[in-house]
Image (cartoon, rainbow, N blue to C red; front, side, top):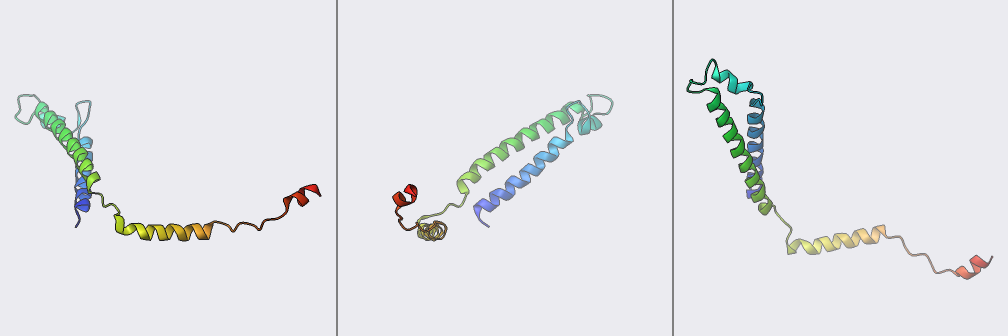
Length: 114
């Protein structure tokens, strides 16, 4: 497994985790954080603690994803000089097959006078 493939798999895992964490949150105070809070904020796993945990997890996953994407940019497999002759040959073949043959030179002065 190449480095680039490994980074893509990690980016995918972080993206799915980020989606799940964001879906769990509810900006109006409901969602998962309210079910842990119950009747009051004095609980050990109260609403405030759950909100801060989800908030920190969201930011951590977002920063991790950003960093992985930047690192993956440097790990992209790029073509090297060995591939260049093959590319030139392919481009020459395409040019010769797509460019129409130039028509024979005709005397346009006679055609326009008639």
